[in-house]
Image (cartoon, rainbow, N blue to C red; front, side, top):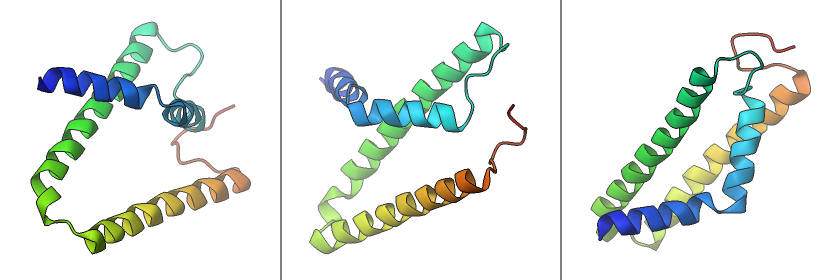
Length: 110
């Protein structure tokens, strides 16, 4: 069934060590866990991340199922280049902002 396939694929994705390290790095970078925050706000934050991941997963799989017959090797190569460029650009911006000691957050962390 579709529901079984979804939960199986989602569990495999979340159990990937690289994804776990990505989440750890993102939580640290964006100061998601702050001391003194009420537990309900932290819970809402975690549930929002899980909900966002589920929505992203459904969006990607829906999009791929709609356009998979239109892709050839050149199309896949182009998509890989665009996504790779976006990842490299985000990494360079994060690296430079780390070196400069700046943050994209609207508040100062202590």
